[in-house]
Image (cartoon, rainbow, N blue to C red):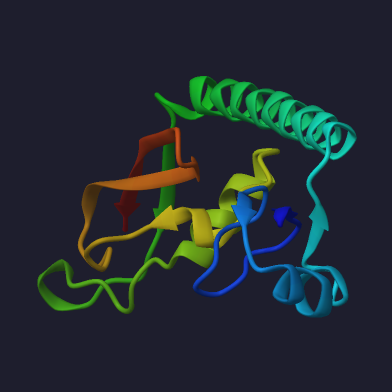
Length: 146
């Protein structure tokens, strides 16, 4: 029996996959538990329209993220930090602090999108990667001053 998966099913396939499975498995497990629907022309049309809608929304989000990227690309975020002897910085600048600074500037970027490879714990400029989407990544300058 041919079915269209509504959710990911372990060892069977991902959402939106079209599978040939045994009739009993399809009726008694997949369809009964809401994991799949029987394949038909109508269900295929619905699937295609949903995929198209999802892709359109994804492209829209990517274009919005690209606008944010263009605005932030040449910006610098400056953090005033306390230092000790020989200009050693007390503590580090975290992704949460960077996220809060960006929110102050009017950009709501989640701290999980900010990728800090090495701790920002020295005076000067450091590049930090921001990944808004798989297709939208860029670096921003973080400057630590006394």
